Length: 115
Length: 110
Image (cartoon, rainbow over all chains, first blue to last red; front, side, top):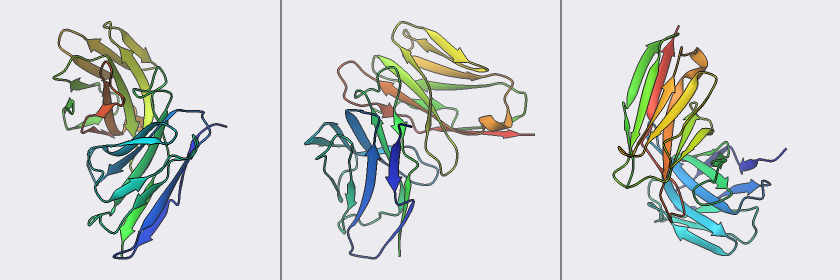
């Protein structure tokens, strides 16, 4: 079955450490996105990519980095420059930037905690 | 610019109806609706395109008012399974991504 997979489900980061969150999709979607969600809050866009080897900053890109070397993969690195990284991170993909007629498909999320 | 959802939260008894609104200050091309259970991924419910159509399945439907630049989500005879946070995502002509509202938290009690 096609879908989008995020790993790990839970991740703990020490102060000053970089960590990478994985996002893989087998839906043949061109566009992929990373969102951050804080408790009781909405979805804030970190980065998005419309095609391979190209990506754009979202609203809260500082302290994060991404790569898009393959269509299926869009990993997110949370760097030590991100001072408050504890949050729920969601990856999504779609056929087009505004989701076409089928909307965005979201992964099940990674909960990152700073220890 | 982020669309505005109202209300921010609503509590209902099972069987009651609910309406959630999503308003934009810019001309809308499309509106998506998603539901998210706590700690889970948002699930796509439906999309409405410019043209004022109304869509729905089962007891959940939505409308798109082009004049008001607003979409409304209707939940009829609510069930316990309808609980969660509902997000609208708005699409604009020429845009590369959706813009999501802040969410409406719906609680259904027995």
